[in-house]
Length: 283
Picture (cartoon, rainbow, N blue to C red):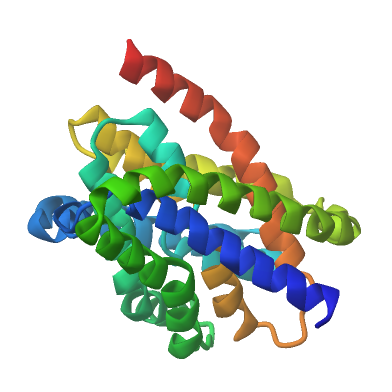
């Protein structure tokens, strides 16, 4: 087994453990709660799968971004919630059902929504795009749906064990993720630096800012819902985005560095909003 394969397996295992860790604390009712709230589900999908993709496509069309960056932004805009986001959301808010419900709903619907949104954007902006639904489904299943379902089953069968195991799974998953990402970041750093310029950083910040604003405004009167949807709209699953991008830029080696750059910029750009919401919700 090569080092690259070992790192890939480590990342997959770490993400699965992170998802299992918060699924161990959830109930089936919480995981399916958003399907019983059609208004909130509609506004969530409107923010994540309509308005932000439209902004991303407009931004790409009006700028001279590197093709890898352009495709990365489009792919991110139609990807579901990343597996590591719910932990951040749960630390900020008290409405756990919406956190779990949004993760479950968007991950389940991604296989349909992602290809459909990409096709509509391609038609609207006269661009030919290709998406592999099977690849999207495989990544969503491995990184979210399967570990999420496993955690829910364990919680139902052994709630006491689930509560204790959640902390261990979370800490182990985060440790493995850091160990795996450090060498990737070091290897990709020169390529990431090469993408800086031509408005790349400005476009990434604008993507994050608009995502936060759209989610916050459509979250409704509940401040917890606003915070959850804002973070979910601005922060997306890089694995699914890479699968979408791979079908549109064959042979392009800078897509993965572009996604890594987005993750770094996103963490920095969204920090002021997280601090503000933390103070507001606790105030």
